[in-house]
Length: 209
Image (cartoon, rainbow, N blue to C red; front, side, top):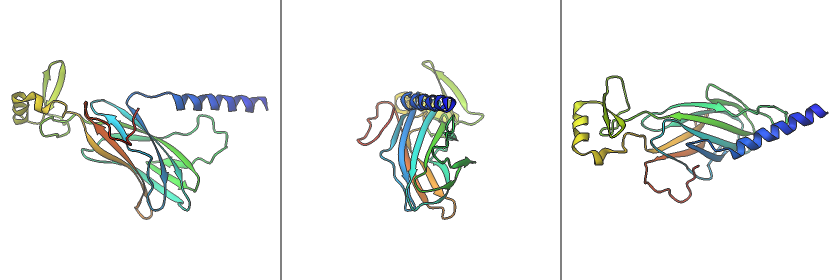
């Protein structure tokens, strides 16, 4: 009995740490997975220009939904990302844990709760044409920062009016973390994710850390 109590207290401490610690460049969404398409409380907003981001997506499954859900990050340009399931460090068997494998949540049932970590690494963009970085891009070091260009033409355009293109080397715009039922291919949850450039204001209802 003493050992079970110690394990329980340790699990509580770990949970509290996870709930209070804020990772740099992170956002947290809270949503509902529903047969007719779930929603989140608010979009998640991140400041563009960082190397890595973390989106913590939590959701509750609402009856009568029961099935498997494929999870994908959608938007252009495409972002490099990996999704991890936030399984408990110590499983006390208090709550059933759906299996997450190959970006699919298996056997979701009403009243299940899920938590996923999405680690995102956006590409560097050509600030003139917004083409994602590829081998062979031209590198230019200006004012302590590296810029990359797909061609001499884009480099020349940037050099002729740097203020016009500064800040466009980073991903901005709207993305969606989408949950699709594997049988119907219908979205059962959509999580809006917004990358905003420096100086852009946050709209009402948006949330970020």
